[in-house]
Image (cartoon, rainbow, N blue to C red; front, side, top):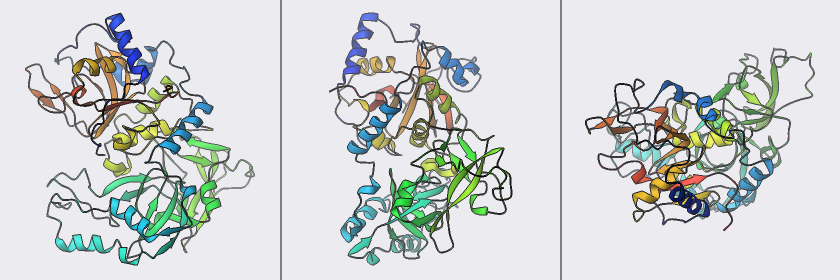
Length: 482
């Protein structure tokens, strides 16, 4: 997603301490003193400096003095999430919304998102989007039908569903022949996510919703409408199963297709029906080899219902959120290794900021959806950079990065995994990637997925490195006192 303009630097205490330690030590924290080696034939994996061992999270954990150090305990995470909800404007408190929404509020929310791009747009076949297609998409917003006071409705998402800038499945692109980045694709929501419904499209097939982290259009067929108590209380009390794999799936069942083979992404939390009778089948299957979870479904009339489903024990899940430790962050990040890049959670995968948010969601930490909001969140321990900051300050901050720290450049975020070979290493979900080759020319790599790369050699252009372009570094830990 697109990053906002860099802000003026915030001189946080942990950066000041890091700079002092660097000056006193005359080197890097955890990094070798040798200069980064040039690209060579030994880079057999197609990424500068990358070795096979570097693709194993255990390799990076073994280099840490205390990989199981608890960064934040449950109480600390609860306090962090409360701070996020209280101070970050990108996070929405659904409980605080009024029962009646004024027309001006609904229109402002829709118009903030559904703005037609100024660049020329092309369809999947490479043909320009026609004026008729543009008019149809705008007309389907149904803005004239917004009443003076809109009664608020609540719902639960019943299936992984795309969030769109307009109420349409029309895919649009700004470059002919490049169909990876659909400019109407915003994000996705997962089964069990709560939403507030603000409006519906003219054709009745789409809902404009607000979730905790995003407002956008979602297909009506993926939302069950229920009362506030049921919707906002779903999954708030244990026992639970938290999805800890990149994805997991409910068991296949022809008896109840609505909960058959549902994709559940990392960090999704589902209530468990712990008192389900052992000899009572769930949708035609005995439950001894699975967890009986309660899933939201949409009845034919659009109303929300909660039904039992099976989450096989073979699927990667846990009874609670994982502990927030360096080892956990490494393990969770590497579970996505090699997954295809999906702009705005397209392709049933995720993009760079979705990758970050799902890693931290699996340990119970709330972060904003987009890089633009993540990078400047006042709830995190932030260092900001601007054009006045020289290479020395940037390099000193990079040398002091710790596992799990988030590094932002315009439009992109990377997760730190360690220091090695005189370089800082990151894992990130990236559409591209480039570095200078042995002959000094820029090597373009179409990584297009979750990849491990060194940070220092990565180039944002022929003349600017990623480090030159760093706008913010965020650290999720106990908040540094002001």
